[in-house]
Image (cartoon, rainbow, N blue to C red):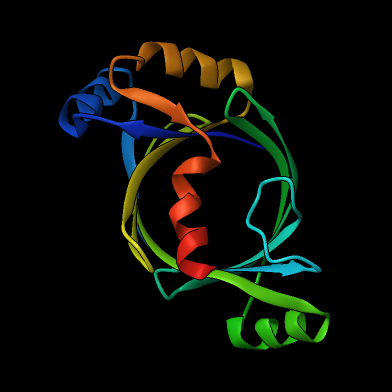
Length: 171
């Protein structure tokens, strides 16, 4: 299960200081290209089943099934199943032959800070539009709520509405 919350944030420097003071360490910088596919729909809504092809730093490729999600006060809970791939292009052909259609392609840069099983990510979408946000991912809602309270002066949970401009761009 994936449990996460997407956030708008202010004052990244202070936020990083708080993360450091609470034992978070920088663990990765990633450039990610994602291709999202749907079967029988063209919606990125979290209520839909999606397939994602991911290219991480041009070195790691994976296919992810993202099942329908439960949204509890902007905390998303959903099953994600990942399998490594040797070819994004061949898998894209397979998905299309199964009736899936490409819904969205985007490129992001992630700066990931970790403390145990809790991850705080600064995410910068660079294509097709620009958007910056953050994400807390943890193994329980309790952990996410703990960090939301601790970081309350610097973050605000947001729902799918922050991604609406991508739908308009695609539309």
